[in-house]
Image (tube, rainbow, N blue to C red; front, side, top):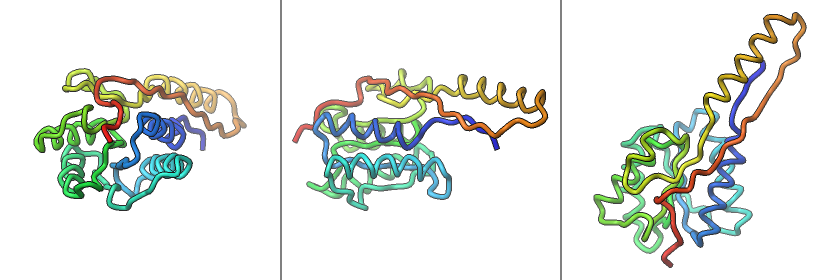
Length: 183
């Protein structure tokens, strides 16, 4: 089967490395549905970056938010109770969960990015309309759709088309929700 996708593992790895570069050592992973492939791909990227950075992977820093605002909000409620073990940064596998994380941190009186950094994924239009604006991985869905359409047309026009797999490049859109680790 031919397909076009983002290299979720690679770009999550790069996002986590960005947080590590800011000095963060306690980084939370808030994934989507654990039964969905993209969640495990992104979690592998998280784990690889943490391992390469020689940082701990505390299971209490991993939450599955099922791609919802409430899932991100719940992750904050649970993780802020960890005291000195609480994350100084959160990576969310989509922007909606990141918005829930921002809301939860705001309600707890935690300042972003002065105390905690947050990164989302997808670069939805709302990223520029939250305070602080959300640092996020831009996933080029229009480019993915155009390439998928190309592959479909090729498969229709050519009888013996080989299966083709393509990855599109993503870009980390650095905005106001990330900053140096305060520790």
